[in-house]
Length: 544
Image (cartoon, rainbow, N blue to C red):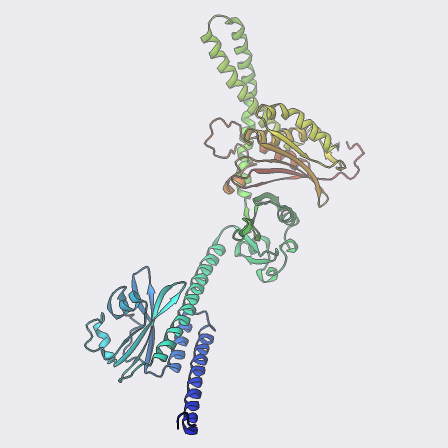
């Protein structure tokens, strides 16, 4: 009778199905165990040894090994082994890519299974025959879409790898490949971090860095010595609350509170007559899909420039003495040349051209001497007035002086000045001179049809007066020297002229009024030059 019921056959089939399910579950469990095991460490050597132990616990053979691709050398290098008779790791076995059995595995990107290899002419390293391998399976390990190495399992007696074992080996090889690649990347990152740490700690500049929240995550050795602080007391604290000099804290607050993508540079005169120069720079993450940048942290670099200030003081004293000595003979020469101009008027065009050149050169020299003597006058404080100054009136006077030059270049002037600005105390004449210097500087470096912005606001009980341009910007290495006498940023434009004293006068005026100067700039995105002044205690009172 067809279709008869056979209970024994049904039981046998159920047993076979149960065994198959159990075997598949065991394989998946083994794969998961390997994945969990090799992902527990980011140390390369630990990962290598853990991977081999895990493989041998899943596939019951005598030995296993891992070779990694060395792209720079163009070789496959043995990096770890278990159960081998000979040491191929201490003095690594190296096989050129594309050669030997490993070359076949890499080229075909597929598992290679062999039996007895003692007479296999595909072997590249003949010493490998000492292992007396009777069965071997070599699986390519993948990471980031490429072969990064080979995982080999071997037996010293005849062994037939089942299709299921090959499948398991293939999956495990890729898991180990990803784990090893992560370990190698971690090792490189750790090495680079160590090298960077050595560079930072050997730097002569004080360096303090923060994370995106403004909390300190790096303080180098120079910063600890300069500020007499200990890194362990600062790490994790907000940079703005760090126990630093009040002038350092003020500069940090200003730099970190402004929405700027450039550096902020400011000087810090200390009570012990030392001078520091600080640069505060934002650090950005990679641009998002919309192109926007986000601040990842801040880095402050501080240099002790006391020796530079002392050298500058010596040089200025010499130049100012020379300026005094040159002023009288220069005036005599100018007067003589003008008399000669009257006597030779109409004689010839050549005479006229020569005399004009001489007068122009002497006028430039006189302007330079006047600027030098103005600096001396400002720094001495002799004749300096102390009166309540209306900042809006100061800005209006400065604009009247510079506006014709801006109109010649088609530049727009934008004001961001509130109506209720408080007063400051100082000398209107010199404050006006400083502001005109900043406006003239912006006029000079802003391209035709560009825009200059004058901005004033109160911050931390001080008044900030800024002039912003959209010129070419200033290289970071030049920003710390901008307010030095005679310093000019190197430029390829020969038409850009100046004595290099304009910003030095600005700095001297600000400091003589108890204030400070700063600059924020980024190449291609313009610059902001600013002065900071203390507010007047009694705005309406005249102070003599």
